[in-house]
Image 1 (cartoon, rainbow, N blue to C red):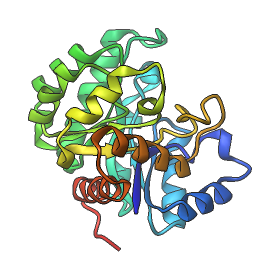
Image 2: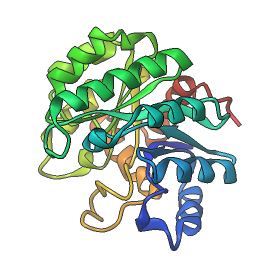
Image 3: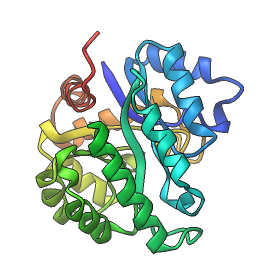
Length: 257
């Protein structure tokens, strides 16, 4: 039993075959998924997919790359949607310093507003971080994000920040990069995180794990992430699946089915 805590089945890459993608995931043992919506187009689709599938849930938030497009009415809309019974988190949100479409000050403002929103509705948050770890930690601490906690999505930074994240009530989620031959950081992190703070994900259709790197990712491939973590930690895949699923159910406040 596996839980893909971050997948974009609402992406255009799945518009022709998302039902088949879900079927393959189920056959691979992926029992639960959270589909993440991050803008005006993908948020309604995330909820629609969650409504149609018993074991699929949704997260709603605004991506930092597009922070410049985020309005107060968008944030009000997200807050309204947060009451939906299948919405289990706010996000993805955060900072992205790789792309320069949205100025840093606007990214930070939208980030802060979404943390405040999550605290009002008492839902965990999903953090997108690209080349901005120290600023993200600063914002999370300043805004008291530990009140709701959440996920450091597809964590790909040094182990030296892990303890700070754990102290702020965040889980560390690993995806496809942990399988990459040229990616030592996530492998080191995989052996460093306490098991009760570990989550797994695909971020599909992105970050496809080895040996399918370069092709479209899909949630069935979260099995490859679990296998690599099991190998690195010298434990069974079944144990990785069991503990990461239990962690996700607890974080998202989902009753086991």
